[in-house]
Every structure is written in C-alpha cells, then in structure tokens.
Image (cartoon, rainbow, N blue to C red; front, side, top):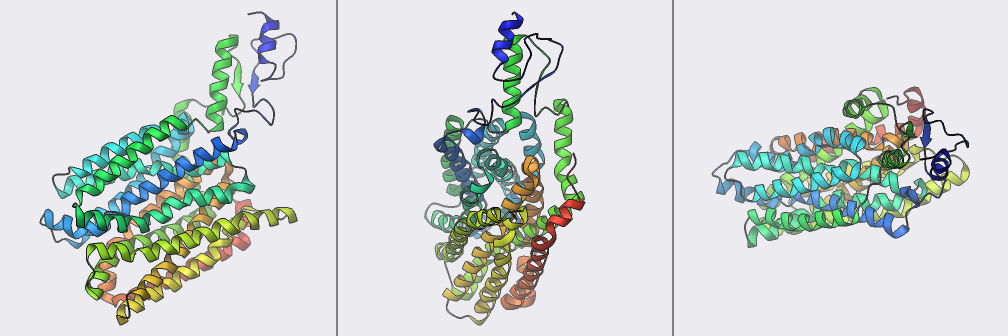
Length: 485
C-alpha cells in the first residue's frame, strides 16, 4: 500500500503528515467528539436498550438469591436436616458467590471487554442454576448455589461500568435507578414468587423457573448487546487498521503498553488495592456490607418471625415481603426523581463533586434504623402483622437510597476504574450479606425481636454518621489519596 493510500485511510483516525513513516507510533483515537463508534454517541434507543438488558439481568440475579428463602424448611425436611446454620447458609452462600465472582469478572472485563464476560457468565449461570434444580443432597445444593452466585455476579459487578460507558454523568441518575431496580426489588419480589412456587410445585421448581427465564435473557443479551468498553473498542479499531494498512506501529489512545497478562494481574489486584489505599472506598464498602447484611438477615429470619408470631404459611410469608418491596419501589422513585436534579443544580452552581451523589444516603441510613426499630418492636409486642410489614418497608426504602447513592458515587469518583471500584464494594458488601445472616437467629434468640433490631439500628446510625462525614469531607480525603495504578 502506498503512503498516499495509507494517509487517506488513516485521515479520519490519526493526524499524519503526507510522508508516512511506518516506524512512527501513531495514536488511534475516536474520530472526533461525535464518533458513532463511541458508546456515548450511540442512538438513545441503542444506549437505553443496553441499560435495560443489564438492569433486567441485575433483577434476575438477586431474585435467585431470595426466591429460595420461603423454601428453606421444605428443603431441610426433604434432606432430613435441622441444622440452623445450614438453613441460613443455603440462602446466603449464593451471596458469597457475589463476593468471589467480581475478583475474576472485573479484571477479565478490563482485558477482554465487557461483552464476552457477560455472555460467558450468563451461559454458566444457566448451567449452575439448572444443576441446583437436580441437586441430590445439601452439599451439592450449597456448591451449585455458590457457583451460580459467582456467575451471577457479573451484571452486579460490571453493570456500573457499562452505565459509565454509555450514559453522560448528568443523566446517570435515571440509568442508575433502572440498574438498581433489580438488586433492590429482587429481594422483595423473590420471597413472594418463591413462596407461591414452593407451596404449589415444590422448591425445585424455583430453579427451573429461574433457568427458563434466564435462558431467555441470555439469548436477548447475545442478540442485542455490543461491546461498550472504550478501551476494547479502540483496541479493536487499532487492530483492524493495522491489518488494513500494514502499519504495526499504530497504538490505541487507551493502550497502557502492558501485555494482557500484566493488565489482568493489575486488574485482579486493583480492587484490593483500592480498598486498602482508599479510605473512602473502604468506608463505603463497610457501610454497604452492613446494610446488605441487615437485608439478608431479615430475609432469612423474617419467615421464622411471621411463622412463630403470626402463624403464617410459606405463601403468606412471601406475601408479607410486599411491604419490603413497596419500600424499595418508593426509595427507587425518590432516588430517580431527586438525584439527577440535585446534581444538575450543583453543576449549574459550579460546585459539582462526586460527593453530591451521597445526598440520598444521608436520608437512607436513618430510615433504615427507624424501620428496624418499628419492625422489631412491633413483632415483639405481637401487634397487627401490618406493623412489622410497615417497618420492613422503611428498611427497604433506606436500603435503596443508600445503595443507589453509593454506586453512583463510586462511578463518578473513580471514572475509568469504576468497574474495579464497584467490584471492590461488591466483594465486601457480599461478604456482609453472607456472614451477618448466619448469626441472625442467634441474635434474635438472645435479645428477642425488639432488642436484636435495636442493636442493628444503632449500627445503622453509625453508618449515617460515616456517610455524613464523607459527604462533607470526602473530596479532601480523596485528594490526599489519589488512585494510582
């Protein structure tokens, strides 16, 4: 190929002179601010189609965690076990998978792009969920639940990065509301559906239904989604131009100069380093872990409370979680209506900072504490069942406002490393969701429903104090601890 032809081919991709030196390194970038290959410039329908797919995946994965809660007693009876720890573990082990999966998922997405990781993990999630449906004993069920949770962690881990790829910062509140819809609503809809399926068809059908629905979503994901990770897109563009022009010195603007193995190793370590070196990330991860632990503690102990205090059946226990779901929806609506508006107002004043994303969490943590107090003391006093249901609604609203705010903050504060920041948060948050429920029954046995919930409320207020400090001084803390990788 002549120098003139090469120059013409590269004209819209790099700045070159008429004389082309094939040994000179040229940087491949977007073709201007309106480049249609840039996901931020995709059509609105295409961008929001991707957001919708990711949001639906993040709805189904938490559904798999909580649909199983009303079936615990039936499973234990089928396998002839009465171990309280195992009965909680078969629910919370799935959440432990959310802690393990991001350690691999986030690094792979930064090396191979997001699309391949979504596809592979979705297929494997279907396989392990189907395996749960045919598990011959408790040991295999626990193992398959762990693997399904690990594979299902993908949209929870890199979904925030996908939104960062697709949606400008001023419009992310709505996208985050859709994205958080699944993790927030899943834990409330799950027990309702699980209770109905358990009573009508048996616990194994919970997994068959999940397998069928997730298979359909996997097909839709493969058919609709395209790569959104800018580094992967520019690298593919660079490789294509190298083949077309024969110039091997072309380099992507986002090329770090590291090999794939070096990038993978660095990406594996990055979430841990973020947690260890960033006080802000560590503090938010611990807050998220506690809140997630409280939610799953309620999910695993509420069936006991409603059955022993109010004589509810498995179906009625599922229906009781409607209050929690209503609180989630209310919190999500409040976040969606207020977050972007507040951020735009701060931007107009010239004072916008990532810490402004934490504003909803300042209301969420006290709501969580109030809900716990109402739930626990109403149950202990055996007042009408609607009272603890109302308390759980406040817990749901507080949970949404807090978690959505934290995810939004991490995306805005860590930008290029958003996937790793969210992954670090997901790992610790999921550990909280796994471990705290294991002591839930003992906590309430020792302190009763009122005392146990009061203790949980005290720690929720400590979380509120930590969030208020980060809202006021988080920017200064981040400035002293810049992210360097």
